[in-house]
Length: 301
Ligand code: SF4
Ligand code: F3S
Image (cartoon, rainbow, N blue to C red; front, side, top):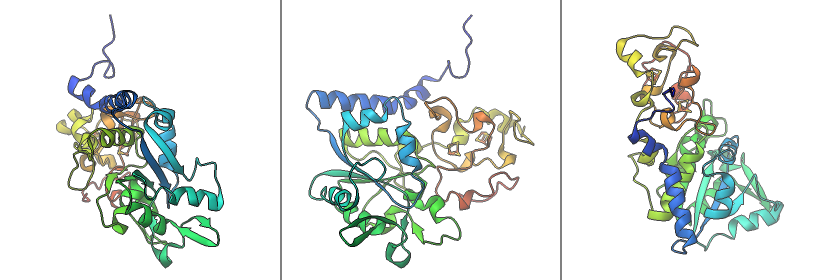
């Protein structure tokens, strides 16, 4: 008899949520192939951070990164992946101004001393700061997407004592920025948002400009350990299979779909691996979520 594990039996509604990205991307590709839709010009700017979001995107599957590069977009610029160097690279970056393009930014914007602590390249003798690049490109882009915690709200780059005065991208632009917080951003959150924009324009957003298709529900509300919480059965040490609320789990205040989407090719996520959610996809991470393993779970969102 077939073993109906949690993974082999999913609620159809949750299953449809999980497939949202693949369905959107498939529709975008079908419209591109039938020439109803053009590939989008995409610029991926890396500012003050660890480059974890481009690495996360490279690890994406269904659809994978190659698909993004070849089927969906004209991938015009990425600090990590571009072959060009020096002034030539900066020329390629700023030459997109005047075309219709989407700007994806990962990493925070360093403001201290006019941004001099994040130099992304040199154009002849001029040192180009991340602040300058994001302002020039951001005001000209069709859409701006802040990818990951640092771009969305400062994240780890802006953690106390924030020596380079890092802020999120929206704080230096006079326009709407679609926010995809997470440390890192899941490949599906970015690919789904991009495909939605290509097909229909701006996706439905919450009051903090996060796409509702990914960020509408707290982890706590979809957690498989929720019945333990409701019965007051709590883990007292890591490794126990009950609710980790008293181990500091931030699932109750973190809005994102990790319990159904999962990571590394949709195979696992922190709580299933006996680690409390540390709220990496919630605004304020990490300062507002620390300390990560604690009985004090009363701190606000
Ligand atoms: Fe909520 Fe965390 Fe407990 Fe899951 S483990 S029920 S997310 S407090
Ligand atoms: Fe991050 Fe919590 Fe998901 S730590 S990866 S938001 S389960």
